Amino acid sequence: MIHADLIMVNAGELVTLTGSPVPHRGPDCRKLSIIKNDGALACRAGTVVWTGSTSDLLREVTALPGAVEYDLEGRLITPGFVDSHTHPIYAGTRQKEFALRAEGADYEEIAAAGGGILNSVRRTRQASVNLLEQTMRGHLETMLMFGTTTAEVKSGYGLDLETEIRSLEAAASVAGQTPMTLVCTFLGAHEVPAEFAGRADEYIDHLIASVLPAVRERGLAEYVDIFCEKNVFTPAQARRYLSAAKRMGFRLRIHADEFHDTGGTAIAVELGADSADHLLSISDKNISLIAESNTIATLLPGTAFFLGKPYPPARKLIDAGAAVAIATDLNPGSCFCESMPFMVNLAVCQCGFTIEEALTAATVNGAAAIGMADRKGRLAPGMDADMIVWDLDDHRAIAYHIAVPDIREVFVSGCPVSGSAGGDCSS
Ligand code: NIG
Ligand code: FE
Image 1: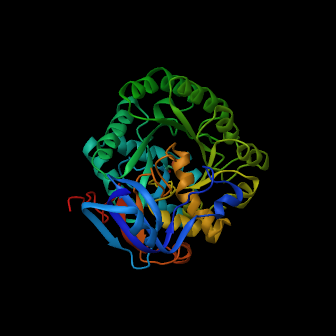
Image 2 (image 1 turned 120 degrees about the horizontal axis):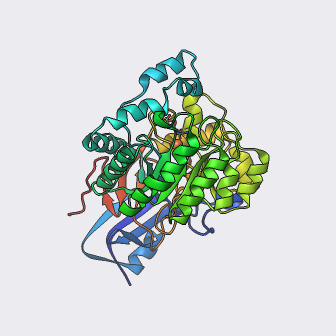
Image 3 (image 1 turned 120 degrees about the vertical axis):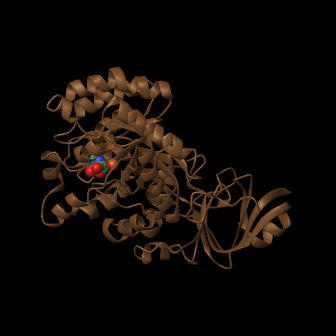
């Protein structure tokens, strides 16, 4: 007999995402492994211990004294979303640049004129750790309300030792306060800072010699990322930098082939990065390359939407057999949005995903992109009890209802979090 302190019965659909190898690829991305009509789930100490039908649960699971029982009354329950690419640690917003873009200016032109990332860097360097924490906490609260229970968070608006460390320390402090699970990435190679203008190689040397060791020593980031893009860092610089980071024990990810096909994806595959992200301009050759590799292709449809750029070639990637994730890219410049449900809407309506492929990309494959697929993104015994109870009875309605998160309750480690920073697990 299995003992549980949290029991959920009578789900209209219990989406488990089990039954296929992780990450899910090709036709497996369309299999959500749904228990229909009478789904039930049991958890103990924040971990799923049993899934099945409500009638089997009554025979196989015993409620511990004080256990909480929910009757889902036919509702849909899914794993919490995994947002595997966000930039929530910065100061100051960029609505002025947004207004300029609305009047016809181009994102890359604004950046070349000293705006863009460097605009946020100037503000972030002046910000206290408290302000950085406050901004980040605000974003995380919205993410939770929209069903994100695990997120990757990047630094990258400091670009000097002191501010990058302050940013990562702010993230560590917020990680200790939020019920969400966070994975930190050092993105000191987000842009060439003004003091190194025209000397990108020297900035990379400085990052390798001084900043990466400081981040490593303090244990502030698991991943290292670089923006490999025309007029930012070249593939050769990305290779040199990420190779050094790998030797120091960091795991790798890369902003690749976003506005131009510079070949960042090939560097990701060559170095065994966990994820290559953006890929709006990825070549057919690199689609084949990433499809044959263990690197996840992380697509950020909100960025193409926000910048008015063509969407990434999702259909080609999925059909080639790549493991595809979707994430928000939440940041103040190129996608000011915390909503994973909206990314699912965009993936389906604009990028050619089926609904099931989009939900797979937003959960289990997102977890694989941050090395957490053994705990996150699926509902099966041994997985963390992070889940969304929807005011819906059919998973297809998540993609169908545009930009409205029909969420009744979000659970993290078996506790309801109700869009706030705190859970109620005392009862
Ligand atoms: O992922 N591409 C590079 N970095 C961010 C944009 C950051 C910004 O504009 O502030 C991105 O889209
Ligand atoms: Fe990004």
